[in-house]
Image (cartoon, rainbow, N blue to C red; front, side):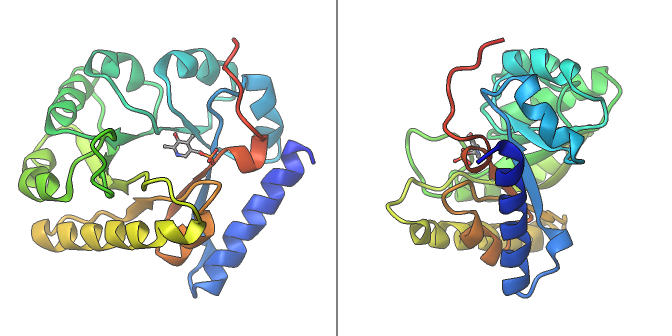
Length: 230
Ligand SMILES: *Cc1c(COP(=O)(O)O)cnc(C)c1O
């Protein structure tokens, strides 16, 4: 199967899952995760009108983003080191992986210097896995007010990568926990966090049933990843 029919199948599944959950399909965005795939592999999907893409490495995005049309929306979905923030901000419409107060402060400071407002999501370590990045739910409850007070950020939602499970269903309690955490943070602060970025190739239908507004899908569209070669 080629990339275009894979894409069309995934997009149709996204719509079908939204309808099955009683949701408006327009509420659920499909992000095509293009990490490791060169610009010429991505272009066919751009050419049929898709515009939302996810990348996880700054160096790779620095080569790829300028090689593709300007009207695309890129989200950063990999860990951002503080010393790479200056390069990342001009590339990404949304930095989904803000995982500490220190990083949020750094992004706000640089956004101020560049005279822009950076849209971000807060990454939550929903499975409380020691090796994984992200705020714990408790840390975020304590620190969100401070993040929201930063002047050059638009804090628009949350994202998580749940623990790897044996079945897609294993992700459901984590997706539900992320949505409930988001709801709690909204009532705690009165600040709307409309975006819920969760679900990948293996479990995006479950994520949609649990309220995802963005699902991040790579290998179901491109096949298995290999090393990025520029
Ligand atoms: C790679 C990646 C994805 C896509 O994973 P697939 O299983 O290939 O769909 C989604 N989210 C994040 C954060 C990723 O790093």
